[in-house]
Length: 465
Image (cartoon, rainbow, N blue to C red; front, side, top):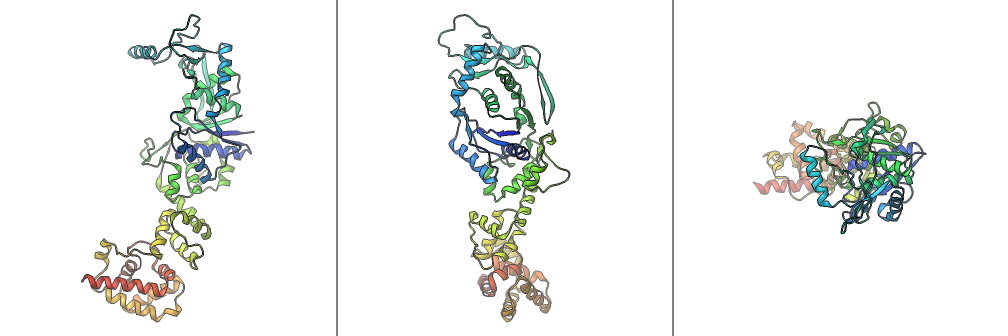
């Protein structure tokens, strides 16, 4: 059975690169009827953040990627790791190293002066003398001295490095706390992880973890190292580009299904298909078809996908989501009309919420730049004429198409271009020049409110003279 995992460190919030890795792991497990586990790698007690830990769990809940079983916390497994440290010491596969920090720094300086790669020189590997006083030892594992460390990566192919490139690395610090590469290998083995899908920033951790696997007699999992996400300039993705807290996307009004669809296409594809339901992702995803090269973050693509999912969403569901953005229209007698008018033009829930707000409760002030551009010497006369026509057709006005007919008839009978009434009317109704269609706005607010807003604009123009 396929078992995958996502293993973030709670030293910061979950960002989209991490979520993409988790998504790939989740999809592969679900495709194979397997298990997807969540492990919190919180052994660095000084850097852990409870808030970040909670945010990671919350982000998983928001995007709907359920994990199996209980969350595993490494900080609660120190006794377990100690047993394996003791076993390696007893078998002679690990040893205590009494090298002081000063000695280590001096060694590194000497190696760098000779243009050598800084590395531990193994001086305590077979040490049998009396330990130096006052030095709390670290525990180092014995790495192979010759040959190669090789593995087949599902994305990058065969990887092989000389064993001499891996020194006897530390598996437990002088205070007894275990190190990253040691506990990752133990946890992946004991949790039955069959497939490790992670960012390729972990690629060169893998040989060290293989050393641990082999020293403890564990079976190696399959490895898939995914290339990073770059910004649109091909450089490392920064917070400004979108490498931010996953929950910030929710605040921006992005739908979780749009974000997941966006992320699955960053480094993976299926023909020319762009829109993927969750079921399609599960059916089609295969980590062996992940691209070897880095992918590029494209904010326009994310917004395009988000707009697509917004348009496809039933209005009653959309209304419920908008409550989190300050808009409550559930039960409104024109709910369908309101959302049909706004969701075609909004790319995010935030944009739609604002459109609805200015339709139902416009600002009392008019946009200053728009006023000078739109309100002309003949505007009052045109608006007053439109009011008379509206009031004459009052009983026949219900749908946007009815109001559209009034606008067309008014422009025709007055022999004026649509711009003469369109922009002044829009500014009168909304206080600005962007938003839903005029016919839709008037159908939503009705004749009385439309007339009230136009008269307010007329008073504004007259008082400004």
